Amino acid sequence: MRSDLVFGALSQVSNRYQLCQLASKATRKLHKPNTRLQDTTNDVLVRFHKTNPGAAKPIAEPAEQPIERRRAA
Image (tube, rainbow, N blue to C red; front, side, top):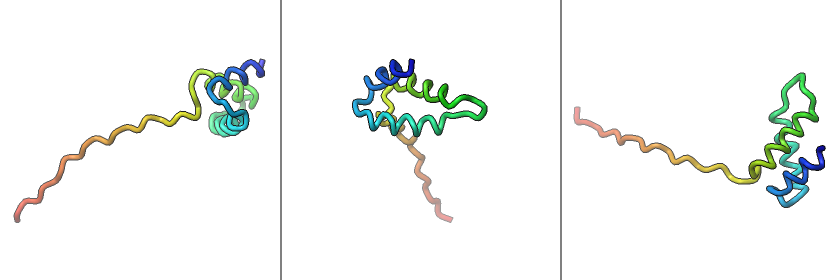
């Protein structure tokens, strides 16, 4: 049932309004043509139950670029 999915997702997001906003954005991005919108929404709620959707992604440190040195002509 969807209510179980919503309550499971609320374990990661404490604010119901924020959960609705994040779920609608994720549903729009993950929806595939020729599939039911309800199935996509359920999939999003299952993903939210497993991970925190509001958590920032870890920032990858850029690889150090070798410094180019100019040679005299």
